Each structure stands twice: as structure tokens, then as C-alpha cells.
Image (cartoon, rainbow, N blue to C red; front, side):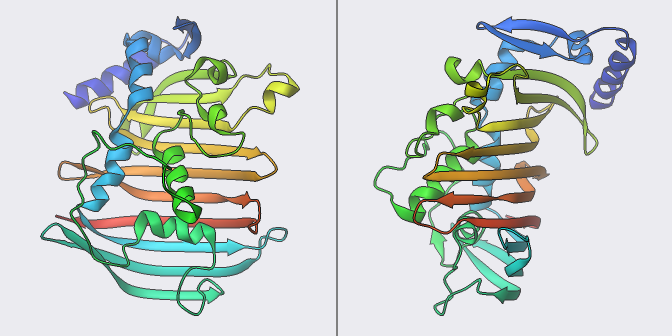
Amino acid sequence: MKVMGFLSVLFLGYSASGQKDTAVTVNKKAITLKEVVVRSNLNVPAFIDRVKEDTTFYKAFRNLKVLGYTALNDIRMLEKKSSAMKASLNSRTQQVVHDGCRWMKVLEEKTTGDMYDRKRNFNYYTANLYAGLFFAHDTICGETNIVKGHEFSTQNKSGIEKHKEQLKMLFFNPGKKIPGIPFIGNKIAVFDEDAGKLYDYIIDMNTFNGQMCYIFKLVPRADLTAGEKDKIVINEMTTWFNIDTWDIVARNYDLSYNAGVYSFDVNMEVEMTTFEDYLVPKVLRYNGNWGVVLKKKEKAVFTATLFDFTK
């Protein structure tokens, strides 16, 4: 059935070659459908709701709490002006799971510059955020991969822990308001009417790593005024959904903003894979810089590559 679906989509693409893109309106929002999508009879309102309420992306990262895996970690801290490397970490780690607990083994590690302080704590905010996603320095027990009922919150959190939670909100709940980030929170809510009117929604169909996917792309409108452009935080967000399972296959972000007390310019790419019945991230790439008042601005590039998953 999947092969037939793949062939039928290819046929639709060729047969629709003379057809133009089509605009439809959902909840007062104009959405552009590429020609191949028009012929596929996609339920557009249901698709938009699926994009807004998707939990498979977050679920994939929650699955890392109950699975073992090997990771190649490449973190590079760069000079702000020259982009020369000032510190780096290159390692191979293994997460082990047993009896409801998980812990990490460092199999290989090489660092340069001042990546660590004397107590082997990270000197860099970006490296701390990376560690919060992929490193388990202590044994952690009792975690699950359940998504339902788990809500992000910055309540009772401060400092690096609060920033980690904000990053998770931005990362796993794109398009929803993020509390506690000065002047930015509402501008992220691109599915709400106020912020959403600044963007074009585009739905397309194509392959990604051999999988036929629906593609949802969000970009700022081309006719924005200078004042409206100042409200843009998401320069582009593209998500690939497998047309058979509706799992997210990949997602790319391009984000930037400067509020004086808080600024960033970040590009992130995530690719997924499957292990048995689990959807899991296999590659995460980050390139960008963050600046928070009273902290040094950091410019970094990192890549996480995950493989050899086990139960």
C-alpha cells in the first residue's frame, strides 16, 4: 500500500504540472496549497490542527528517556567576530537503561580551550543547554516517555534551569507562547491571530530521505511593513510529516530576534528515525548565537548524532 501511495503521489505531481498553486481560507487564514497537494484531496483544516497540536516531535525526545543509545557529540564555541574556534568538545557517549533507570558512559572525549572549568562544569551556556538534552551525568530513575499530561513550566525555576525550560518550549511547542522571555513570548505564537497574520502558510508534498511527506512551511509575508518585520521571530519553519504515519520526519527552524536584554539568531535542523515502534531523533544540528543581559554573548555550532538504540 505504501508503494502504491508513493506512485500515486508521483503521478499526481506529473499530472498537475499545468496547475497553479491554490489558496484556501481556514479560520480566516489564507493558506497556499502547492499543485500536488490540491490533487491529493488533503483535509486542510484537519492538517493545520494536526500541525498545531502535534506531539510526535516531543514524544521522540521523550523516548530518549527510556531507551539506550550511542551519541556522537560535537560542540564548538566560536569567536563572535572571526568565527575562529575558542573551545570545543568532541565525544562518544553511551546511555544505558536498566530497571527503569538510565545513566551515561563517556566512551571517548576530547576538549580544547576552556570548555570546562576546574570542577568540570561547562563554562558555556550553550554547552549546558546541550547537556540538558543529551547528557545524564547521574543515574536517573522513574522517568517515562509519556507525553499526555506533561506540560512545560518555568514556575519555580530560575537561571540556567529556567532557560532550559524556555528552550524546550520553543523547541517542542513551536508556534505557542513562551512565558518569561522579555518582549518575545507572544510573537512566537504564530498560530494565534495577531502573530499569525504576519506569516504565510504553505503546504506541499515531496520526499525526504526516501519517505513521501506532507510539508508545512511557515514564512513571513513578503509585503510586511518595517514595523511588522520588527515583530518577526520565526524567519522560517519547515516540518515534514510522513503521509502514512503522520510522524514528523524532520523539522528545520530559522529564528532571530533582538530585544536588547535578550537576543538570538539560531538555525536548527532535526532528523528523525525509528527504532522498533519508537520514533527517535537521529541528528540534531545547531548553528547560532544567544545573548542574555549580564551574560556574555555566545556563538556556537553543535551536532548530535544518535544511533545503536536499545531497550
